[in-house]
Image (tube, rainbow, N blue to C red; front, side):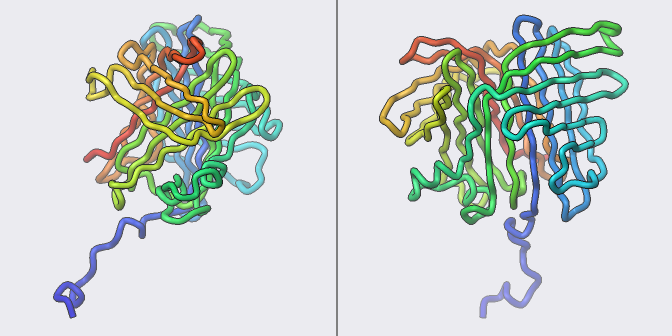
Length: 319
């Protein structure tokens, strides 16, 4: 018998796994210099939720993130009220309304499908020997589900306080939505890069994840979206170059190869991001997971196209 077996045991990180359902909405209108983030986390077994909303206009940020009561009804609901954040599911995989209002700002964004929804279980089908996001997040296949979709969005932002008090802006721009559910705890993730890109003729969602328990193993998954459908990325390598403020890279290069063998090299100009916003995804504890959203220009070497992207870089830090 080992000595430590006669004393209270250290609680393993996997014990903190819990069921969560997350929605993340990203919007950028570079012509009007407006960017928005809306995020929600619902934890039914804990009877609680967390919602955040961030808007940036001409370099000025309005940020809100707070724990809210569990919406009821929740299961199969066509609308969720999460504190000041309201989500309406108007047409599956096609139309959604995201609205937020508090004492500082009122916003309404209508998201519409640009390309088809993608389910990251397809990555496991194509690369069964690779470390999947479900294994990384929930420690077993299929205990965590993850989907994404390239969108467009239109709406209106009205400012109640600050430099733009009394003004309203009609917006029209690029968007993305991310939906995940299953067993997870963000504080068990060590670091990640979660990025999406909207080009004139195509879209991408590419990410890598490392967790606390198995940091030597990294998940690398993604897809390319075109009007005809989605295609799994067979291999992915993300390269950081330079170091700017907050330890963020100046340039992030995504080396991806699609299932049909087509290579894509995407160069994201993080240094000159037109928006750099924090994402509040859960109530901080003794450990906090820091997410920074870098909305920036991106160039595809092979096609010559320029597009817009959001390069989310996150890491676990002491609170």
